[in-house]
Image 1 (cartoon, rainbow, N blue to C red):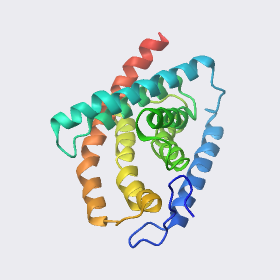
Image 2 (tube, rainbow, N blue to C red):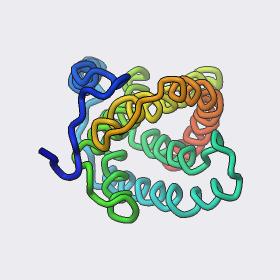
Image 3 (cartoon, rainbow, N blue to C red):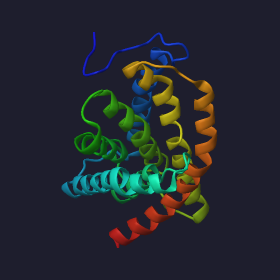
Length: 227
């Protein structure tokens, strides 16, 4: 039985076990929420926070699907993805301004809503909300929790390390969870682990470097906004 174009394939050779994927999407946010509560970074979002998230998600959508995609086609190098990197930079800046747990997850969900509205369509939902929010968004919130609500602050080395962590983590979901599970689960097809390994190895150095750059940009922007 197909639901919203989701075929539900779980027996494709090489596909990640659905139990493992489900465990991540259940356990990871719970663990991070418990840590966030312990660190005291769970606060109610204000109207201004929602405005920042909405504007950030809208700019990220415009960048990824219009400006960034045009630049990607012009550059035409598979491991150079300025559209994706721009989205990461914009949403890191948003999280650095808000500094509350959930800012990363909610920003990615809003981004996904806008992306579906202007580009993808709604097929495959709600899986993409879960995927985007609890991978890319969760990784940004992880930094908020680890820094006790002061993300991308401190000395230059500390800021760089935070950006490198986010950049590295952002390089994993697309090849690992998308190619290894969600794509075959939703659409069927072949799981190619040689390609997955290659994509991770070729992209993570660049995404990590961009993460460091994004951390320094967010540091400057957040200070300016709060000044």
